[in-house]
Image (cartoon, rainbow, N blue to C red; front, side, top):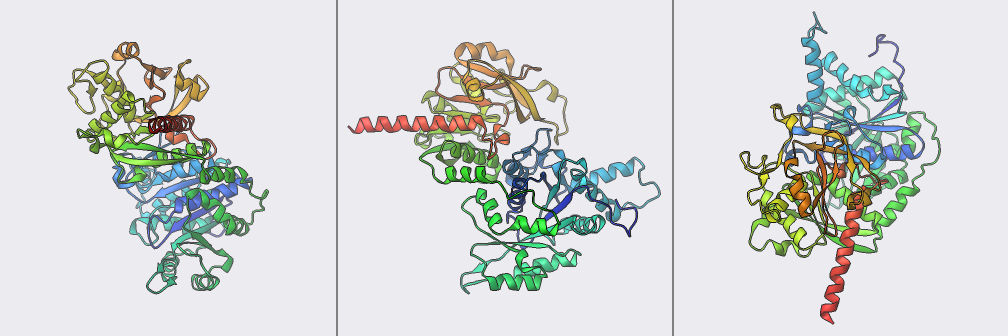
Amino acid sequence: MNANPQTPCMASAKYIFVTGGVTSSLGKGIIASSLAKLLQARGFSVTIQKFDPYINIDPGTLNPYEHGECYVTDDGAETDLDLGHYERFLNIPTSQANNITTGRIYNNVITRERQGAYLGKTVQVIPHITDEIKRNFMLLGETGKYDLVITEIGGCVGDIESLPFIEAVRQLKWDIGEHNSLVIHLTLVPYLKSAGELKTKPTQHSVKTLLEAGIQPDILVCRTEHPLPLDIRRKMALFCNVHLNSVVESIDAETIYDVPLLMKKEKLDERVLEKLRLSPEREPDIEAWKDFLGRLKNPTEGVTIGLIGKYVELRDAYKSIAESFIHAGAQNECAVSVRWIQSESLVSDHYESVLEELDAILVAPGFGQRGIEGKINAVRYARENRVPFFGVCLGMQCAVIEFARNVLGIVDACSTEMERETENPVIDLMEDQKKITVKGGTMRLGAYPCDVRPGTLTYEVYGRTRVSERHRHRYEFNNAYLVQFEAAGMMAAGVNPDTRLVEIVELRDHPWFIGTQFHPELKSTVMNPHPLFVSFVRAALEYATQKKMLVSKAVR
């Protein structure tokens, strides 16, 4: 990194590190995204990366209950869900380089050790692991594409597993010299109801832990349920050794999309630019963001959409879908109320009663046998009752199975994921997956092209014949059954131009019934809501209006 210990190296970009203390889930990703949005709105080129301290190479093999949604980038990286926030706020894609884990760091170092890169040396956490962390810290900055690189450090300061990352931050601050990096520390200022007081001691202890690791935070961002009075800010500034104007309040917000405006009010972006000695290109242009918030908070109508999934107890498992509904709802000036429905609950004799109040149904992605029959029942209800239906990945596959069983009369139709020996595998393992035994990073991942069939609803939604969407799956529609399906009314509305793999199915005689093998939710952003979600919400509005008209006629 720095050959001469007396001379800091020149940085090709400025580096901002976001650390957390006191507790997890304070919202480091939202703070990082909000700051990035404000800096971007001032004319700077910004990217964000997440460094996670767990040993897994990536979150691809983690159960959603463990880690929430696995986000997938265009280049096929399985990443932390915070990268979804980064993309939704900045409206620019991330990549493999934007998410690094302890597992990947150690894997890189051990691989090089086996190749002989350290012959004669004892490979140690310092300097070898920390040097590898620093190399990855700077990868994006050295591309020349970015003025500022924001790095979110996962976990909490003081965690044993985070120590190498914190040490690498300390070293890098020294390596690249003053004014080329800064540390923002996010903490909690709890309110004790019995005492009627905000308490600063957790923040003081958190900063003390950071100081013990050799890092003086430059800015404190304080999560709080109540406004921070001046005396509280003075106390934290004094005992944490930061300037008073660098104690930033992050009060609980109505929506995460309020946070950039709250941070602007607190002048977080101004403090960052001052400390990095950067002149703002202009005042932040966030009018489009304010327009989005105006439509989000002032809907003229509302719909209820059922999300049928296996992991609904942890809503972060479907984070991108939930956010896509927010984007599409604002686009339609419509409040989307998501009803989270456990698919296992839809196997009773009276499952229809759970679905009849919905204005639309989305069957969510997932893996494995559990809850499949409930998802298939939800598809059948939507098809037979002409309720707008959207199937994503496994949701699309369930739509295919349901159609085969109940329309084509292939009563034993199934997926080989659920029944390996089924005689009618309408969904089957992809050919290039059949010899794969290693699980991590081996699915069909990332962005692939899809040719959209003219004359279909899907074409009407996209408005073009070639799209690119992100995937994460091993199983596919079995083309041996395609002629039967199309003759009965389920069309292949989109196919991969190279493999002819069916990417989109839709019903010919249904108001809105689309299933996608890909994950459109992964490309929906605040500034560019995904067209399939926008159209789906609009269809839900139309269905809700029709229901009201029927009820009104019945009353008269």
